[in-house]
Image (cartoon, rainbow, N blue to C red):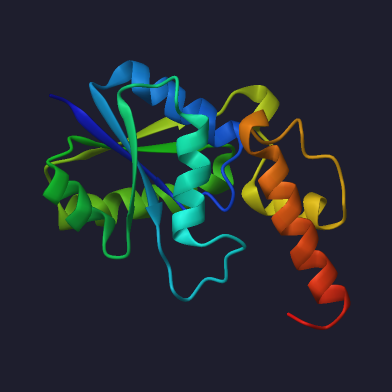
Length: 169
């Protein structure tokens, strides 16, 4: 069985992320969407919430599952006996960072290759941080996130924005 790991922070998952996950699901027998936990990074959603948001979006992908991990990606990939790490690329600036990470992961665990999938043109500009910024100001993010999770994302990000405005962060 060929297993791929598709890691990211997914804070929150976007249509761009979902496109990469869907395409990876066609290439591999099983795909694990891995919510990476970085305790140094402030997120809008907890790791469990991010997992739940992703699960709501992948119900039509039977070979995709969601997990979370707070260690080295290479250790997780080894533990799951995955043969690939799938990463989405939007621009050359993504490639520079992701290439460096791919080399480090290969050094830490030679048993997996990093596979880069380029994003579809309509998602080239899309990022979780852009979604968070637009939603926090009450903007319409319906073109950027899967419909299944639009309401909870809007509610959370709007609430965080209101708290910031009131100085209650």
